[in-house]
Amino acid sequence: MHLKSNSERHPWSADQPLVSLRDVHKSFGTLEVLKGISFDVRKGEVICIIGPSGSGKSTLIRCINGLTPIQRGSITVEGQEVNDPKLDKLALRRKVGMVFQQYNLFPHKTALENVMMAPLKVLREPKQEVERRARALIAKVRLTGKEDVYPGQLSGGQQQRVAIARSLAMRPDVMLFDEVTAALDPETIKEVLNTIKEVAAEGMTCILVTHEMGFAREIADHVYFTDGGLIVEHGPAAQFFANATDPRTRQFLSQVL
Amino acid sequence: MTRSPFRIDKSRLIEAHPSAFPSWQHGVCVVLAFLASMAVAWAQSPVKPAVPSALATLVIWLPFILKGFALNLAISFLAMALATLLGIGLGLMQISVHAVVRAPARFITHLFRNSPWLVILFVVMFVIPVEIRIPVGGKIPIPDWIKATFAFTLPVMGNISEIVRGAVLSIPTGQWESAEGLAFTRAQTLRWIILPQCVRRSIPPWMNWYALLTLSTPMAAIFSVHEAVANAQAAMEAAGARPQFLFPFYLFLLCLFFAYIYPIAIWTRTLERKYHVAS
Image (cartoon, rainbow over all chains, first blue to last red; front, top):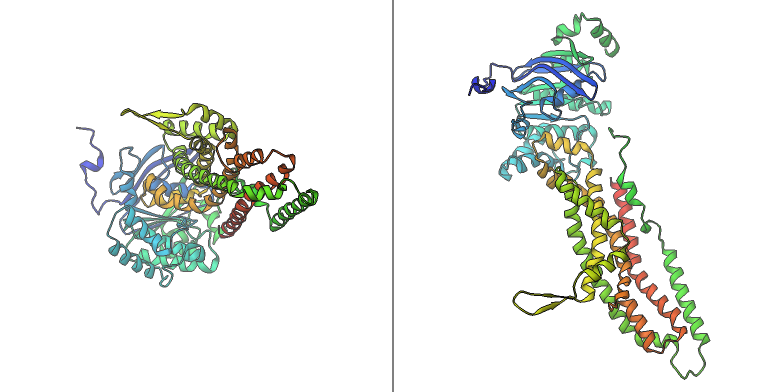
């Protein structure tokens, strides 16, 4: 059996990148959205992906949990190839939590039920234990008292925090945030960003696509700027925002800062 | 909101139903028309009739007609129950990821949705035997009203299948994606997330089809199933087949069905409005 995959020969260990992308290509029809993206994310690291609209940021993040298949290149999560057709996609998604721009809470379930649902139905964990954890998560995102409220009666910011709690309930190893504040009112953005900050501070590995530059500067260990399906420039947050060299990065930053 | 601009909004199609229009004035009009016709019939009858008036005849035969109406209701309940069961199954098959499951379900759905009910009724009446022989010996007769019930089931089944499919498609893709992101399988997503959300938006169109089904049950009179219309006709025949009978008897039948269906239509419309506001 000389065709053993990389992951089998070298079991993943914490000193290796948790998420690793190599030369990732993705096209929708003739439109090439990702033209060879490579980067590594280590355990506990927080990275932000920024860039103009249509630069493929959301597509990139959706590829990491296999929601969008890629055409070429490799994405590994804990050493497992995401694009391997034999991969247990469900096992992958238990490791990778995702929060969407539109929250996508289940409208027929209360906030608490939204958080409890996946651990109950997917992981088949005992109800009491799941409920205890779910209540703790609701408290963590500062929504104590809203457990029995339906999503329709919550503000956008509150819904998004329930969505974050719902994702955390699966105890993922890495969290993906796809422009999670883009649909929110300015006054509720802050509460969601604070929640993310707390999640990151507890050592959760986070990959964020965001338009909030101030937040990126504050929270990110590493910032990647994408344009036209490529990473144009990247670096540690402080350095990136202070001394961007590429003209495209500088132009983008001058527009948004 | 990210909405695909070219997707047909099923919920708006579902709204285009007859039940969206009735109001209480319609009820008053029908009742007034009935009373007026009774007055005319009474005025026309001789002062000392040798034979009972049309109205008196109707009163005499009332229990017989109402007994027939009970059969209309029985047929409508049975056919609706069966159509709902089969229709949901067929609708779920229509959204299967496997073409071998999807294609036949789509064919059956469209076959029965797009055929005249009367034609289906004729075909079923002549295709299903009068009795079935059981291997042990002996025969089980199949009464005509059972056959008619089955015939009415088929078109309603096709339409419920489409209601299910439409409702599933009307759930935003974000629901599927977030379920997928939480490691739900497709079956789990359907069972716990998509279908529960479909129930509420399917109830008004489902009730509409019940109303249409009930209003179609008098078609079974063609095959001398003893429902309300057939019994009314038999009563008129038995009472001497006078032309004066026609108007009060048929108007009574109209009122009978109206009195039953109208509240359902109003209720359906209320639910439609409520769910429209809620969603």
